[in-house]
Amino acid sequence: MSDLASLNVKIDRSVKKEADSIANAMGMTLSTAINIFVRQMVNERAIPFRIHIVGNETAQFHQLIDSIRNENKAKGFLTDDEINEEIKAYRTEKQGAWA
Image 1: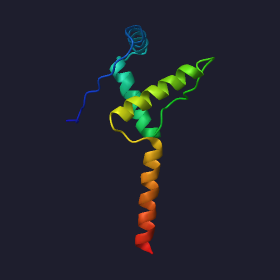
Image 2 (image 1 turned 180 degrees about the vertical axis):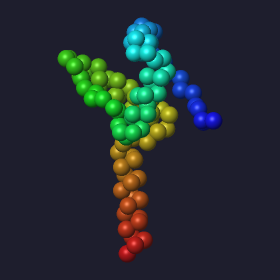
Image 3 (image 1 turned 45 degrees about the horizontal axis):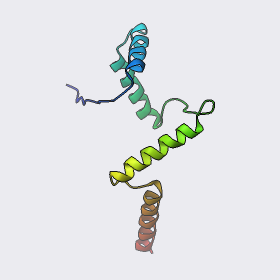
Image 4 (image 1 turned 30 degrees about the vertical axis):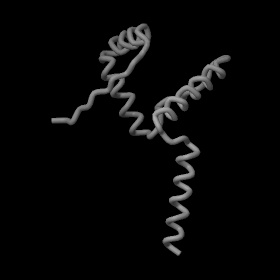
């Protein structure tokens, strides 16, 4: 028996309805389509499609990124710079141990 886990995602109701309709037209459930996406993400070790900004949405995109960073900071997550500093310190420490 496989080891299954649940994934709960909040999504706009109209987007979910449209995505469900598209998945059904392709002969699958939305859950199956999401499983395909996640498996492909794992296989490629990346988002399995190009993400890009269309039109004049650059400001909205940056607001979203800032919002995510602020949420992560409030939760006590490390920033990209902090992670890079920890990696750098670890590598320096390891090099010293090998000398």
